[in-house]
Image 1: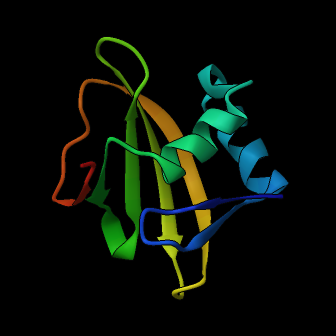
Image 2: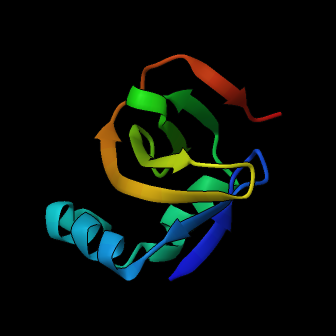
Length: 99
């Protein structure tokens, strides 16, 4: 298990079980474990997801984005749900812009 700190200062856990789920379903992320953690800690922006989740978005290439979906359960604890890449900028209500 590894931990990243969100833009809100919340410790967000990325467990081995979640990492296995991510690479099983999104093989293009194999070998990008630290990129997923970095997206949480230093996103280009964060958008509101479904049912209280947040989506940290980070540009990987010209039109390719890494999106990490996570939940902040308390002010001190959170966890990664999944991660994936998109061809194009993620849509949604921006809740945190990078300054």
